[in-house]
Amino acid sequence: MSFPIRHLLFIAVGLVLSGCVSPSFERAWKKPSGESPTQKWAGFWESERHGAKGRLRAVTGAPKDGRVDVFFEAGWHGFTTAYPVVLASENKGGTFLISGQHDLKSFIGGGVYTYSGTMTGDLFFTRYQSKYDTGTFTLKPVSVK
Image (cartoon, rainbow, N blue to C red):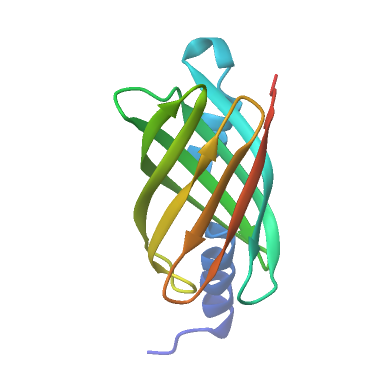
């Protein structure tokens, strides 16, 4: 039985496009802020090890009970990766110290990432580290209609 090459092409294009958009992140991003206590952030990630940089967005819940739920969407080399992370948070006079880790299931650059940083009303900054990379996330709040 012969498998036409055009079918392989459609499969390859489908796999590539599936990595370019995260419908669940887009739903969280477009949700009106009044529906739940969330903050939307936009900025960039920057690799200190490789010199690469890319677009970064995040949706966070309100820090509570020593934790903050974060949904990141990172763009890199034409692909987009979106993933949820639960970070520990500690309020120090209006600045939240955040830390945690996440096992990123990705065929490129995956593995366990650790995070530590701060979140205030006007800046979300964290350092990340993994086996393959070290760098920073720098985000500022945005309002989305």
